[in-house]
Length: 231
Length: 159
Image (cartoon, rainbow over the protein chains, first blue to last red):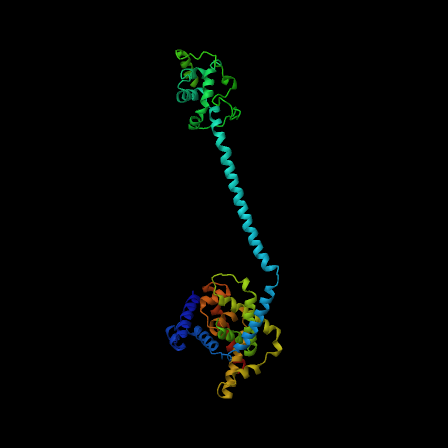
């Protein structure tokens, strides 16, 4: 604590003396610290009073410095390993960064390209065909058996392949609707974008048989079954 | 760049104005040679220059102690008024320089930078790579020790 007060008093007194105040005037303001501060202020004053040396021979100094500067510029003009290598390192670093940026960009683009076609093929597989087909049929195939499709989806009838066939045609319009549904990766579905009936996971059910009698709308029972199935 | 102040600072260390002149020139040459190493750290450029000068001055003292004599100082100060007064003054200053050399390197630096080169505390702190508070503490201890040494020297001289 005493040292802090002493430090503060010394600080103020030194500033005042530098500003032109006398040592005595400062000491009068700090009677409690006088005994300790006085020797220090006198020493500081003695240091300030050290005689200034005669002015330096600036011409001589300038000559020495310019001569050395000339030497330095001569050696800098020669091919040197230090200077160019520093720039080479910077250029290499910049090139590496640019290459990395290109690589990352390429990966991102590639990712985007690969992801787009896969999306339409995937979702239907994980979903019950019944869930999909009705909508498909409704949206895609007005002529397609709106009536048929539900039966088609009924697992019982592979014969209802007509709907699949219809749906086969549907695919043209399926993709737009398919993405509407939440795409889910088909664990059992073989990812084959070319598959004509992406909505039907089991291939067998998808087999198109145009000859199969599509007439089923009156079969409400089937629909009920479907509903049950949906449950 | 304050060549006069730098010269005065170096003279206070080496005690020889002509040697100090050579050291000033060498300081600027080193500055040119090492300008590529200079890093902007917030401290003024002058602090870096004084650091170079200080190291060269210390090296000069260490290397050339034998040629370090009072005659140079007397020559330097012969023009100051009455010869006997000049001699007394010179004795006083020489006592001060001797006492300074008994301080630690940092204590010497803080006193020379503050009171010979007359740099502000903030700049001295940057030069010494300390906080301002730490620099003030160092200054207080250095002044206290120097005062004690000078007092002991006076007692030793029978004054």
